[in-house]
View 1 (spheres, rainbow, N blue to C red):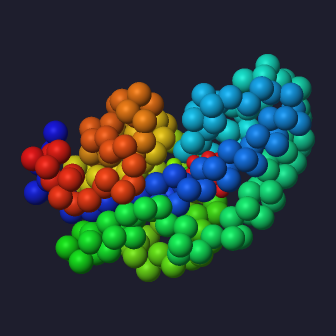
View 2 (view 1 turned 120 degrees about the vertical axis):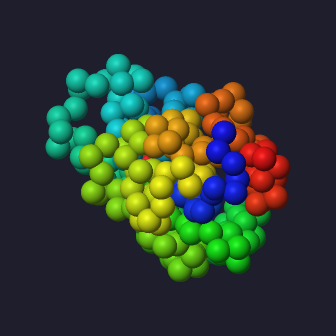
Length: 223
Ligand code: BG6
Ligand code: MG
């Protein structure tokens, strides 16, 4: 594993890492699953984490065997409905909704001179960062609309290193989703997974929750 001394920047996922929008995504997608007749399970919800809006819809349709039942226009309508519901749910977000320990972690990274960029496939990310009062903490946000492929493809994490003008080897990617960890590893960055170690077993470093993530703890694990 890379030595911590080589690390110069952090690429953050947003949903489920900085704030718990994962629960709002799940809530809004569950309504779609009910509508199309796909059984909603915890495995399906986990598998959707980090996956782009249209890819998520495709996974939900496929899980119920409905992948050929909807036209492109109908799919776009379902995705738009999901997003309308989701946008209502995230309207309540304030800086108090930053996950435990994350504000301190981000501030300590700033104070120690690390660069930060955002590697979220969410088209709603700029609005969410603004509601959380975190826009200025980041060097830049990778524009998900400009990506050829979403997670688990490495593209977004390669771009997140470019935003910071760093070599991928100098970057730690921070994720709560298996697809995101795969993307970080594919980009040759160090992967830090937050959550269930069974789901995130491919990660170089695993933390059980956001409160456990500190510079000191990372240093200790990486050596
Ligand atoms: C990811 C979430 O960050 O963004 C996914 O983990 C979500 O659940 C994806 O589908 C796309 O988000 P949005 O806001 O563009 O629909
Ligand atoms: Mg996430």
